[in-house]
Length: 241
Image 1 (cartoon, rainbow, N blue to C red):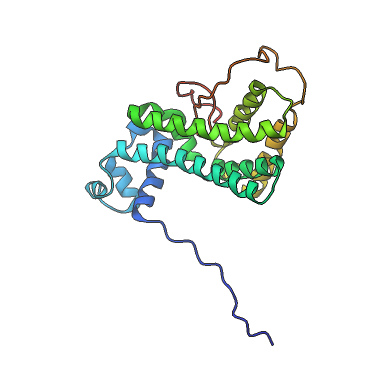
Image 2: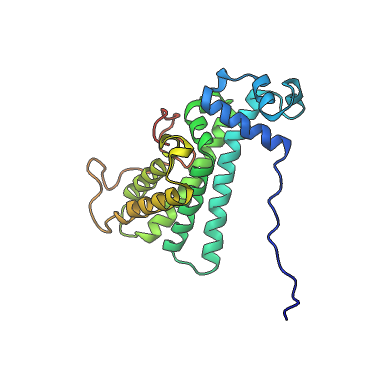
């Protein structure tokens, strides 16, 4: 008879009131626009009075900043951790890239409202917050460019960078795939996105010419537009993430 104690996985911690407010604010801002939502409506969604929100946030602007800066910080920190963890165990660039793809798929499926919010409302942030978002996105992009470049060492940097941005556009398209209930299920959707992302990177032809219209010595564009870094110095129009 085995008397060893049974290990149980601890239940996830319940979200704090602040986290609840941010989640509902993201949902409402994404559905109706930043200016189409009042503080009272956000409060009602979490069961507190509008004025009660001011114990947690100075106002809607503060909520928006925490949402957009916060997700950019989490993406970069999570990506860097995945690279460090995989590299420290001797994983090659293919495994590291796979880990990055899996992490971004989790974001794209679980935080669809933030992708929509970033597309539409980034321009509402203060300059300092917007610059912070851009800086974090550029660093996140560079994580991917470095890994993909090591996996395809004969591809030009411009081609590698273009492939990274194209994959971000693919993965960040989840808000445009229909209502959550219309998708084939999280597991199936994640598997589809994973195959598409790996297929896109596999299409890099080592030693081949740069894509049409892109000179082989094109300067690197390290700007980033959306979470995960679609290129462009200004916020991109709402379309594919």
